[in-house]
Image (cartoon, rainbow over all chains, first blue to last red; front, side, top):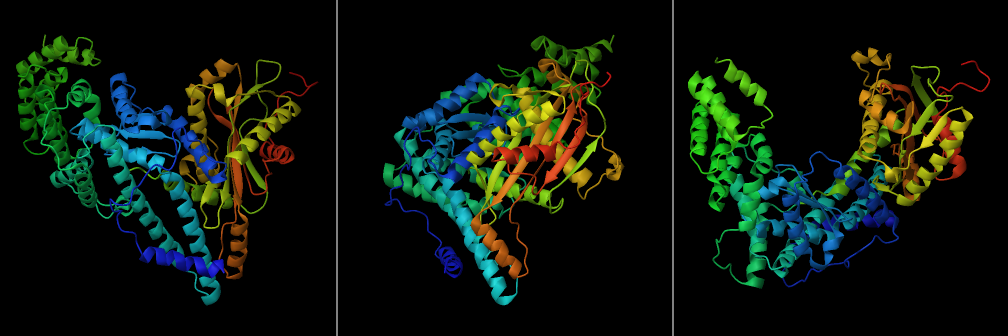
Length: 391
Length: 246
């Protein structure tokens, strides 16, 4: 009976695609703080795999170990997690993408790309809340079980179909994959709603929960090359506009309209000012000009040191290297050099641009300024070579 | 927003499943060696066994591989014990490294070995022979001379690396495979296999490499592990046997 019955159930489930959760249906934690895997073999197996993955991650060269950054992110996670704080190990990973992830074991990854996109600590907390909700709702485990059972039912269906008709076609399996992706979207919505609640309960601004998605939309708008849709992400996640919408409705209904704020976020500003190079370098290297420009604009509004921002504007033009970009880069570096805080690299890159323009005197003056500002520069010998060539 | 790791992981398993399955149906082992005898300045060649990278999975009805912690732990323990007695029988001085107190370097080499080994599998024994390796006729693979530091740390001549994966078909999966066969379709009903490398700790070169698949032995029990070790290490170059001239 199972052979014939279950695939049908599976198809029905697909047709009756669940709508987004309404606010009336309360989504809560499924596990207590300090949770350990149950005696179930699949859960223990998943934990084994994730623990192995964590061992790798611990040794990863991409891990950011800068104490100020690590403490900042850890602080946010602990505040949102409240009594679950001790369940998480947080890893800040160098990656310019907008993402964070969580495993069933409490291994949480936050990408540097999230830190450069957020316009407030509350927005980072919003993403963190979403990930914590995945954890306390056991989403990894349930996702795995869902995939297993859907694929099992589907495989029986396909073989049964082949026996009856002589035609081998993975109709059931294809359907099961679609069903699994839908299940995944449902989990995302759950995590969005519970995450927004955790955010508010921790004392962060719950309106950050949807603002972060509007900012993603704004970045997409500014992008020179749009994300290709539909990708796998769009199959497993509700789209950004949809998320922004239902989160906004939920938050306003529950916590009231947004209070006019716009006040600066000194904690985030300090983090950006202290570690801008580390955080933005990878974003510059993506060569996604429109997106980088949008991010730099946001940072200017936040009050990041203009000397640093002009330098990165210069970097952006220099790396793009289109017609007229070296003049734009030169202009940006010159503006950077006029500010109170000037990254030493501003002088170095000015030097190289002047060299290209065959303005040797200006180049050498800039190189000297560079060595004055950064006497321990790793490329000192190279710069001195240019300076000596003059004598 | 979060990456759904189980899906990404399970997508990787079938590739391995097929890799071993493609190497043949029955219990076989193939090996390559570039030395006949282990060399050492000591009485017996000193070998370290890196923590064996062994993993057991349950292959569920729908073809999703489910990692199994209990089986994996049992297999790792049985395997280490079996290797210890095997080493004694070939006249090698073997030290088993304990996973729990190893440094980053060990871990990195363990990962590097998995990657190099899977590459060897694909390009030396598999379908994609490389002209740069004499189209499969030249065995020239190395983990790099940087591994010398490991040899000095443990005062050893060779390191033995092991990679092994076992996909046990569930009852449902077996039933499905039978039904599928009746319908004329083929379904993977589990597989097992792995490889071992002996690495010269002065050069990093893989001086001996052995692949085993299907029916190599059941690592979850002690006898099966002994059998598997026997198959996996068959033809490993031996040290100087007692009574032989130096």
